[in-house]
Image (cartoon, rainbow, N blue to C red; front, side):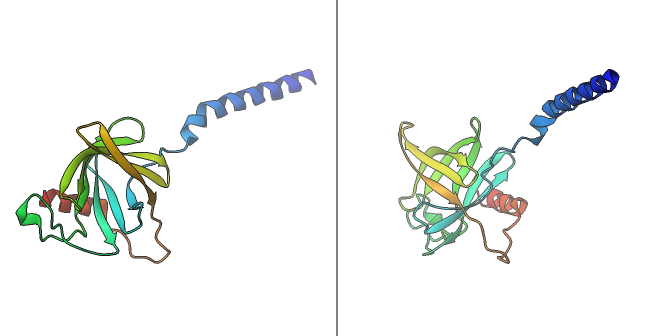
Length: 165
């Protein structure tokens, strides 16, 4: 009888050890910024895509569509803000963080800045002047209703961004 007890005890230890080894495989995947985000004042959504290892964000919806009237490049001042890139070439900069440039069509200026995942459904966006005068806001992940139109594939969005740069 003691042989059976020993067998089951060893079997439990082996199962426990195997479970510990496999635990990292079942760990939750880090949150990713790809997808659609509702800006803080809820008047626009930004679609973020991974384009060859860099995050790019474009205006995907706005309550009051307009044009990029204050762009420093006169040839772009009549382009619609819908579809316009606002998060530019954000490269990984630590765990759940990306750094790059941000374009603000309200004043036509570019800022150094970055994005950071606060949670799966919250993104911190910050822009800086001179590298130390910084401001930002939190965006909320937009979850479309069932039956809503599918988003443009990331590959298509990235190709379009590459062509317009």
